[in-house]
Image (tube, rainbow, N blue to C red):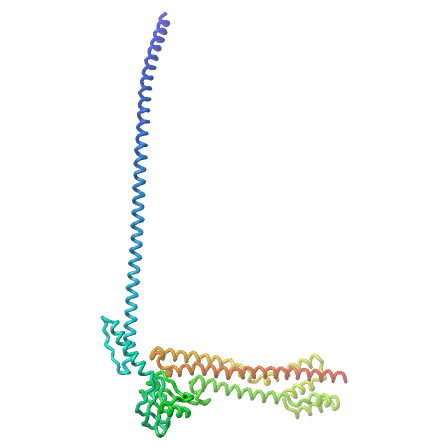
Length: 434
């Protein structure tokens, strides 16, 4: 019974408790729902505010970007203007330097004619105007035909007084009782008579203010630079201009030509008479080996010696006889090839010496250019002569020696072939008659 009551009590308590819990849950659910709605509304408000702020920030960013682009454009424009200003400044400096150079050059060019230009560095246009005024007046003066009293040198070196007829500033004629004609600069603004005899008529016609049919004239660049007469150079002068290397090449060439002639003499003496093989064969078939050897002893030359060795051993085996013939030809090759290698060595060394002279001459030329510059071509002529003449001499020596040496080698080769063919022919003919 107690247990039943206890169960009923528990059941009643459970029912009451669950009813309270449901009420509390419902109340809490309603509160949370209200909170949720409020939070959702708040979130929407915040999102709306953020959107407005984001849009405002984008507008600000766009304004800032536009300002940055504007500043960059302004900076680039200023940079370009600065660069242009620098270029303009450099151009002004260059132009100023060029004007200074022109003024200095013009002033120095006018001094020999007695015109002194005062250079005002603060007023170059006025200085240029003054310089151009004097220049144009001087050009007008120098472009006319002027007749002055003066002196010039004759061909024998004597000084003669007479009339100087100046054609502008490029040519001068001289007329005197002893000689007349075109004049050439002799240095220090003096003149000497030119070698052209026809210019005498031109000088006299100009003196009388007449226009000659043919103007025989000598045009010069500067009256202060002496014009030297053309010198006729001999072969020794040309060789001497090449220096020591040139003489070495000439000596080697002389030795090479001497060796070439000696080798021609050796080859001519080695061939012997043309009918020697026929006589030897006839003597061998008619009188035998002993008589033939006596006959060959009186003959000279490589061909006779090879035939002598062939006849002496002609009765031996064919193979042994051929070996003896080959050995005799090899022995004679030493004489036939004598001086051959020496000639070809000289032919090879000569152009190399010419090249050495070329290098030496160019080094000397550059040394002179370094020390004195290129103002006077006569200073450079020595090195250029060594450079060119040595090459010429080397080729002059090498070409004939190389050609002659190879031709003589071919001749020696044909002599060897002829000796071998002749010896074998005699052996073959002798074998047929045994």
